[in-house]
Image (cartoon, rainbow, N blue to C red; front, top):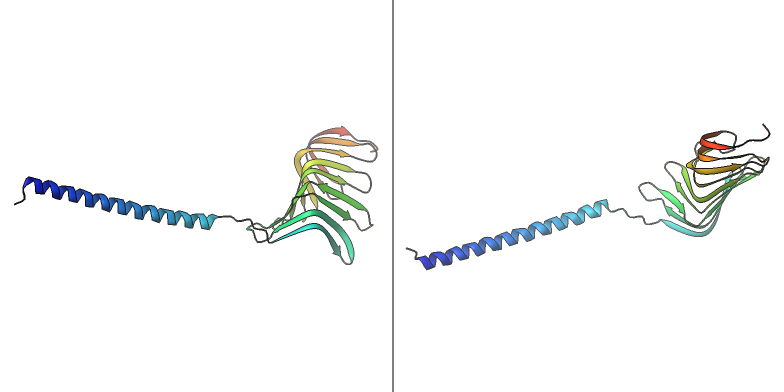
Length: 193
C-alpha cells in the first residue's frame, strides 16, 4: 500500500511529466508552424529582380528599312521574367515618332513603364506630346495602347493647336494622329473650323 507522502510524490512526478510533454508538444507545434510559415512565405514571395539594366539608351525601331521611332532614356530596367513582364524607364523618356512622310512627333515624360502582355505604355509625370504641325497635349499621366495606336487618360489635360485653338478638361482619349478625340469633361475654344 502507498502511504500519503508517496502518493503526493507520485502525483508531483506525474504533473511534471505531463508539463514536460505539454512543453515538448508546444515546441514541436511552434517549429512546425514556423517551418510552414517559411514555406508559405517562400511560395508567395514576389521578387522583382531585373533581368537587365541599361544607362543612356538610344533605341531605334525600323520597319522595311525606315526608322519609325526613336526611344531615348537615361535608364532602362527590364523585368521580363516577372509574372507580368514590363520594362521601366525611371529617369525620363523621350520618344520621337516618325510618320511615312518624315514628320516627327515628340513625346516626353518623367517616367514610363511598358507592359509586354497588354502592349500598353504608361507615361508618368509632365507628359507632353508635340506634333510636327504645332499641336501640343500636356497631362500628368497618359497611356498609349500600342495595338490600337490610341492614347488615353483620366487626368486633367490641356491641348493647344497651332491656330490658337485650345481645350482643357479631365479625361480624354484620342488617335495617335490626333484626328479623333473623345473628351469626358472639357472646355475651350476652337478656331478655324
